Structure formats: structure tokens, C-alpha cells
Image (cartoon, rainbow, N blue to C red):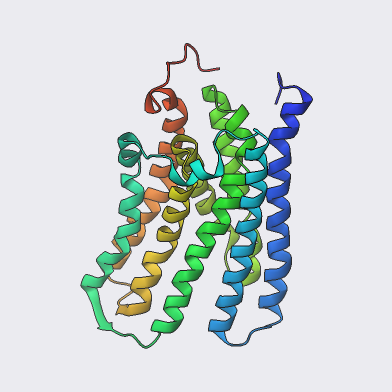
Length: 276
């Protein structure tokens, strides 16, 4: 953060610290709740999780709105939910949209359709939208507030902003080891996805967009899995899995870097003379 005065550094760092605190409080509640089996009924557990995530996301938006009112944000909170999405941004989103839709291909190899778990599945999908709301409010909206206002005017600064936010997003999922997740898989995957969401948010200035995309990324494969039975060792299932891995581990991080490099052209700003 060289070349910044102390006030600017504080305006960049303070929302990052606040975002980390919200994340720590979330896990301080969530992990004991799951570990000690506070809610033995799965549906009740999901509902409790939804409430915690909505509370965390709302706290992030309240803090974000405070920065907006003090003139310490690039956009107002209302603008972050209403800013128009350009045609160029939609084109950049095509690989992610394909990633969202790919799980539906597994329907073609389905051997059974069931609505037996429709109630649990419905609650789980609501949980995924609560996750999109919470994680994007905190890890994009709040965490990136000062970075977007003060640290995106050059390629190097944009790369720093995207990489740091992606790293925080990945590490923010490491505590999921308490829920049986493998951090060696989940952390790199979420870091790559977090880089793309950060770059897309930086480009679009639309928080609602990344909230919805995040929710759909997490939802579609759960919908197909919850409604259909299919061979997990079949060619189609494997092809869908590998295709999603290529998109999420390779294409999306590459696009995030491209957004950082060609940001001004994509935003129709005056071009920069140098990459420093």
C-alpha cells in the first residue's frame, strides 16, 4: 500500500478487518452448532444455518452502507443492486453460465426421478442463496469496499485486489474441514472462483449479480443430485465433472487476470499508458 496516506490505508484496511471479524463470528457459531449436533433434524439445521448467513450478510451490508453514506465507497448501496450490466460483462460471464448449466447434462443419464427429498432439497437451495447473499455481501461488498475505491487504477493494483480477495475467499473456506470438507480441494477451488467473482464485481459494480451467480453455481448440481439418480462412474458424469474443473480452475482465473489487464477497455475508460 505504498504511496497511500494513513487515512487511505485505514479506509482500505478497516472494511477488510470487519469482513474477517464477521467470518470468524460466523464460524464461532456454525462449527459448535454442527459439531455438538444442536439440531439433530437436518431441515432444522439448514434453517438455522440460513438465519446465521442472512444475519452475517445483513451485517456486512449495514457496514457497507455506512461507508457509502460517509462517501468512502465508489457506489452507493442502492447502485450496487441496480447498476446496469454491460454486454461485454455478459460475454465474459459465458464460461461461468456454462459451468452453472453443465450439471443438467447428467439428467440424460438419469436412471430414476424422485421427489422424496423435495422439502429438504428446497430448504437446501434456499440455504445456497443465503450463502451467496452472505459471502458476497461480506467477502466482495465489504472486503473490497476500500480496495475498489482506492486500488484499481492500474493493472498491478487490480491484480493485487483480485488476488488478495480470492486468497481471503479461499482461506475463508478452510474451517469447513470441521464439516468434513477437504481443504486441499476446497481452498484452491474457492480461491479460483473468488478471483473471478472479485474481478467481475470490480468490473460490473453490481453486488446483486455476483450474489445470484454464486447461488446458482452452488445450487444447480445439488438440484440435479437431489431429484435424479444416475451412474457416478459413467462417461457423462465424469465429463461434466472434468469440464467444470477446467472452467473453475483454469478458465475463470484466466478471465479474472484478463479483466485486470483490459479493465479500462471493458469499462470504456481512457486507456492507460503503462502497466504499473
